[in-house]
Length: 499
Image (cartoon, rainbow, N blue to C red):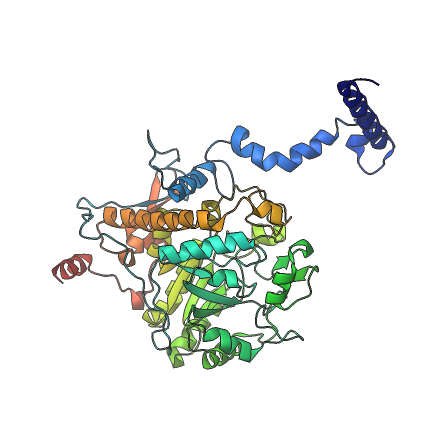
């Protein structure tokens, strides 16, 4: 009987010969047919290509949607380690599109403005208004697209940091409620979680959820940044028995949400629908949308000005927003980028004199406090962050969200892959990251000489429009003439310090 190692070698050779013969006779793959065995390496490299490029090919500023510099900042702040940079910026500060805040010669002292403070109350006239505790919150992400472990980690960390978490359109799960914190319940065209067997809206179930003390607002999803005009896509492998029960759909079958609501087909019908939801639940009701034609936003503002009808808040998703799965054409070429979208919404409500009646939430590739500060300067009241929080719990941007093969357990329903993500351990990283973004936001705010992020305006930022040419953002996006509302910041500062 030959030694074990000889048997192993012979067995290995037999496998290689079998693979080579298989490659030579198959007709589907030309590379393998011409280069047996070796040709298989191509598929291995393709499979692990994103991971390889992250570490041995691209530099710190090359990758998309988030480069290594951005991801490293999230990882470091989430772990509570030193996130400062040395030797100066790696960014080309003269690159067109770059934005720069204008520092004050007399920055605000840390003790004058220690924290960001609370943003405006959402729906102050509703029976149960929502007073968010944080300007930085967790943007919509569904249970199904994300794993149970990921949702629990986010919910626990959000409650610890005083943020709210948005359910996404996949329904309200026990995991969203597990932290005991504030939750926004989002409803998409498929009505997951409040769906009747025939696909209609279960108004009694909606009433029940709206009276849950943890549910602080209802959000009607009209469009999503990475796929406006396309419904949610959940592969069959992700539709477990639990997810199917929460959503009200068959288990083990692909779940494709309709690309728009069947309950309304124009702005007037949408507003009527919003009002019916507001009559059903005591909490504020908002809409999530991707900006296209500004006339639609103007119509929403008109309805608010004429009779106080319509959403209590508008969640603006930029075209650069993320998703677990979407068609490439929509991801790359549909919708208005976030910064232009914020201005469109802010200006519309200003023109009609009702900007103080509405809350604007902005989301789309926001990672740092500077990103949040720019969104707020343009006209947002708060920001929602999705992928940044995923990085905080271990996402490595493997770009496998749609395959159920996420290697870190974040975007998969595979129990084995979820083992590495321990919610009770990752919750602290979620809270650390949220706290770091808020403090980073305050660093920018103080440097500009302000007391609160709510005082940031477009005139506090310049944008590079060409090499050697800069423009105040207030000139690039001028405020509507009849609603300029530029604060006398010296008076505001003196009043706040005095009182």
